[in-house]
Length: 114
Length: 114
Image (cartoon, rainbow over all chains, first blue to last red; front, side, top):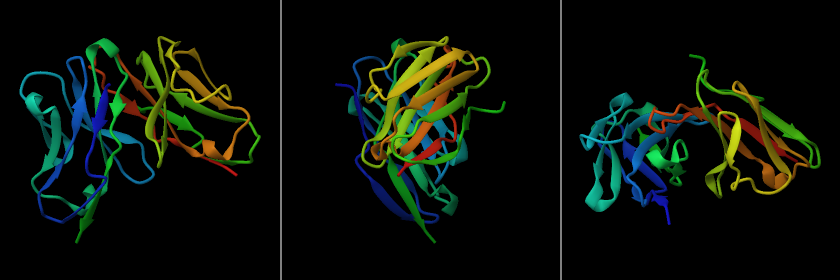
């Protein structure tokens, strides 16, 4: 079955510390992978996406993610977290053959300590 | 670009009343999605359209829910009659084939049924 798992429901990091949010997927076709961020009361904003090519992708706000096919993972990283990064983060997977239809993980809530 | 526009942003209604949520997708996009977000179930795809035609409505919870897309720039999601368990955030999103499944979300309609 197709699925996306974000193992960490809630993560707390100190401002300035590094961050890694985990995402694992199960998908039969060649996956397209996405990370979205949702601030309180807002919609989902695209952070970055992976389609093909370089497995390390750069996104907005200083985020990056690495696609590891052997581990079925697409973890999101940031070297130094800012207080404004506190939000909920969603990993999602789709495929070319299923245009536009994404499967989302349950989300990880990030809290940033001053 | 104005992005995906949803209305109303917030609605409180009484059980049994009809609720209509509205969406204007990004101009030129050919896919439109309705998602529902709750604490318990996360982000669920309810229905999506391609070129105004419903493609997959398997996520629509029951007959009380209906969605239409009369033209490329407008869609509605209707709940009749509404129930307290329908309380959620409803997101509309759109995408363009060839953009690699990148879905752009509106800011959501926050529905409370009392």
